[in-house]
Length: 67
Image (cartoon, rainbow, N blue to C red; front, top):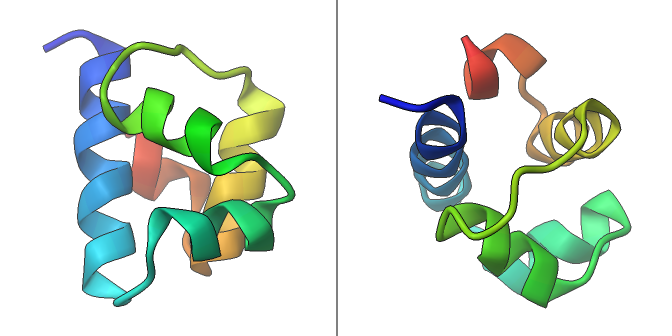
């Protein structure tokens, strides 16, 4: 499985487990909801700095998203 696909799957799973919307995650991470949606649908391959923001917003480790 390509890294972007793994990231997309894990991001959505963690977000849903925490019961937050894409909009809420985007606000917490300082990103747009559209960008979060693009990542979750494998249409964007974010930089590491964005992955770090997403992990912090989810109160998770970067490795939880990209392991």
